Image (cartoon, helix red, strand yellow):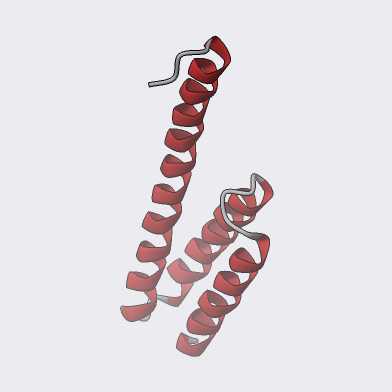
Length: 87
């Protein structure tokens, strides 16, 4: 347990950031799984809409540095390939 006031505050801030980042990552994973289900069921129109949402979530997470921008680009590319394969 930290003793200094600054350490206590940084610990509290770190926990707060962790919760925020975890929430964003969890939502992102949920949207990606929804997209994969749509792709598996070959529902192309819904998959296109879901893909747009996933792209937005990935870009926002990368902008906030929750995930690395290159990781976001790679995931977008792979998901787009899967969706285009079904059409």
